[in-house]
Image (cartoon, rainbow, N blue to C red):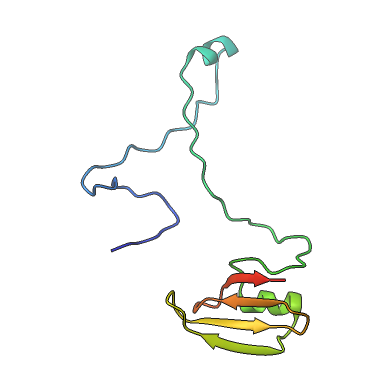
Amino acid sequence: MVRYQNFPCAIDSIGSLQSAPPLAPPPANTTSPSSVSSQASPTAIPVAVAATGKPSVVKEPRVGMTTEEVTAIWGAPEEVTQDEPREGRIEIWRYGDGRSVQFSNKHRVLVVDR
């Protein structure tokens, strides 16, 4: 069974080994720059972080936005249709100038056509 979460697993992917504990931050009182350079530096692991602040001005819908966010940007659609392709049910909002937005069954933007 596939599961998703927003934090690393405590158990490795094989499911039986404990992962290494997270690296501790360096001590606050270092003695000299030369002693710091002789120590091995920890390897940084890139992590995707969600934005905490609101964007300044959003003019176009983006993948992942809610129906309320799209309505706030483009207004109410002229036509709403539903479809059920192989991937699952979607809702398509069409606007008069050829723009359209496809939403997932969880009411999140999948595709934006301008």
